[in-house]
Image (tube, rainbow, N blue to C red; front, top):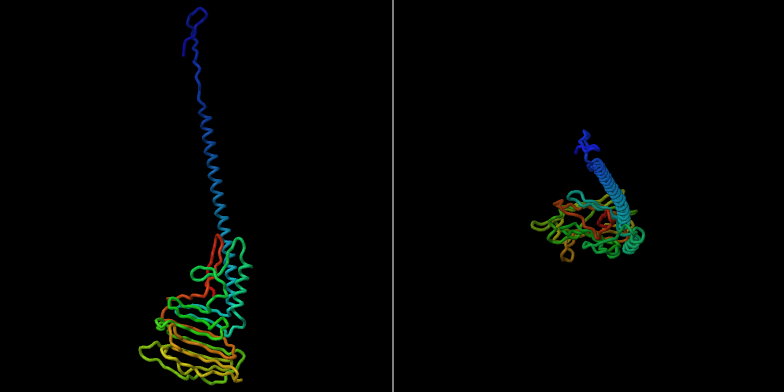
Length: 312
């Protein structure tokens, strides 16, 4: 501040105030608040965007999973129908329902079905194919007609996809894992002539050698015959006498044990002549620590979901 003077140079009582520059503090505060609000809005929008993208991804993933399951389930059911088998593992027992012989050439059907799956199901967003154990793509008409119980390498299978014979094979080292086999055979539209199942030769179990407990039932719907013998020495071969149709033009035989030697060796075999049958086979092991390994795996996948299934 300074004192003012009048025209005569004398001091006056008026006080003049020096001009000062005032910084716009309120404007700065307003700008900062606006920036913070704007930043909060950007952050909130970003959160909403991320949530929507995540939700969209979940929806896409859900839709993809539904498609994968639908495609897989469709092909799985069709494969069971083509092979005409159904199977399940229940604790230490592997159960399979089967029919022999095959009504059609399964090699041809499998090949054509593999081509159909490749052409019909696959599009730009989904991949579906068949693989071997190493993950290599394969053609269905090259499949081995065997189902394996691993890691024992005990197999249930057929002589070919014509399914004219059924056999259960095992490495010698794994024979001890087999506790029992329950086998029910049904004649289709045929009458059984026999009154029981007899064996020639018959080799009973011996101490120190692998022994099979076999519970056998053969039925035509009106009559069921069984075997009086239930224990078989797997180191030697036993063969049932032919079980004939009443008409005499068809029969079946059962073999157990070694026939021709070798490794793996025969555990049980069904041989047919001019006869259609359905079977229910329960293979009980002395452990539940095994898994069923099929001839091929069905792969179905998208960017969001994938599923593998062993094809029977």
